Length: 111
Image 1 (cartoon, rainbow, N blue to C red):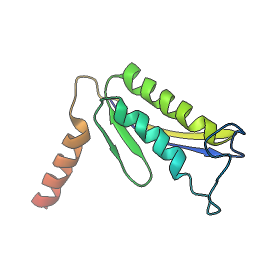
Image 2 (cartoon, rainbow, N blue to C red):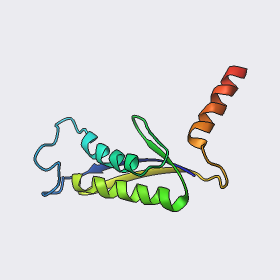
Image 3 (cartoon, one colour):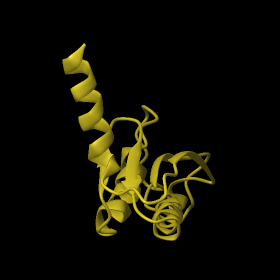
Image 4 (cartoon, rainbow, N blue to C red):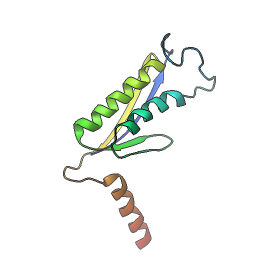
């Protein structure tokens, strides 16, 4: 399966959290997102991060476990957490993180 997810904090940072002392005035959440992406990269699972989502591929339990850990990594940055998930559940298929893009590019080339 592939999960595309976005996680970000909102509300006031926890008093003991990493964002409590210095929070940019522009509303940026890059430090919190970096904490989540660090979890994903440390998972060893195939992944890709873009400007709005991180995609991760693996079995259900391992992927959802990484998403949970990413949410926990963001928690100290705010009093609330927003999580958006989109899943492509296709049993028996692996390598789809790149495979889907390869098929798209091939289709575009054929048109």
